[in-house]
Image (cartoon, rainbow, N blue to C red; front, side, top):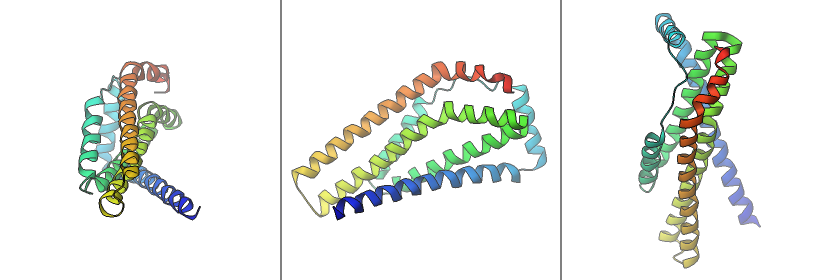
Length: 194
């Protein structure tokens, strides 16, 4: 029972840590925009006003490359800081685009930014969260197998977690395909906010 509580506490701490990284990134994205020179802000706002914001995003290759890099380097421990930095970067980009849309159209821009991030970021971030979480779990079990308990039970645990990891990757690909075909349509419904 004590071991279960300790494991539960570690998982809770890891989730809290990853959420904190995203929130810090979000705040840094807002600060980064606010620190930009006025000329740059005006240029960004003018470009957004004149261009078609809604367009198809094909993130499948990019996301697969990022996930592969995180996965590959995680076995050398380097991947974990990379994974956390990527979470920070995603938070930063969300914070940045929220404040950009706010500057562009105030409350209406804020609503559009929220919808935009719900469509393009929310599910991907949740799946990325799960991916990193499972990746850390796999690495922990591999290290446990190599240095502490070389038994078949841990090998089965690792194998099952790898299957879950692959399933998460498939869900990320499906999400990217759905966004590519339907994201544009959903955002067009809210284009009146801009």
